[in-house]
Amino acid sequence: MSRMVKVCRETAETRVEVQLNLDGRGHADVSTGVGFLDHMLNALARHARFDLELEATGDLQVDEHHTVEDVAITLGRALSNALGDRSGIARMGHAIVPMDEALALVAVDIGGRGYCAFEATFNTDRVGTMATSLVGHFFQSLAAESRINLHAQLLAGADDHHRAEALFKALARALHQATRPDSTLAGEIPSTKRLIET
Image (cartoon, rainbow, N blue to C red; front, side, top):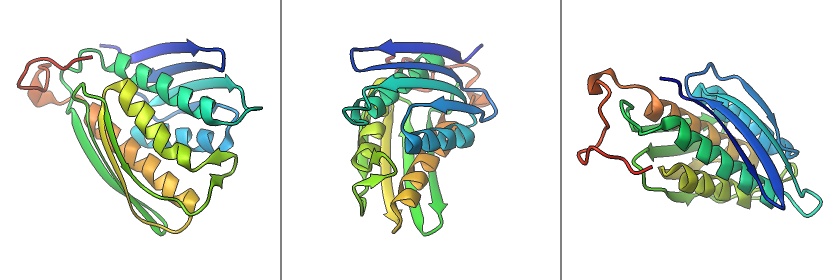
């Protein structure tokens, strides 16, 4: 079964196009106009082993908030669509990832209930042209739209670039683990309810 989807979302503030293949090789072609977000999405695709093509245009003359948020919303919808009824997948995954002095933990449950618990603080207001407050907002928007239970904790770190990158890489590894087919399920939906709301 193909787990490749295309999603386009357009508002008065942004236009975001996403092509996502969950069974890829980690190839990314990303352009959002927000350099640090591009860097994080490239890392996400590489370490989740997703193929990701994403192009976003937004009202960056205002600020980067709408673009970051709407990229997360659209990517979340693409992830949900690509998972289909979520049958035959491991469903849960977790990762602890270091990035130099930084250390991040992320756990996910692709159980149909969108929820995000994000515990991280940053030392500066921005990394490049992206507000560090938007890292948590990205995780929250992604979790809501993909209907994933997502817990993220920053365990250590001093440099905000490293802190954010550790979080995105941990998210990637947790998603890779959770979205992989589980042969022991023989295609069954991994829930005692025999249903995962999508």
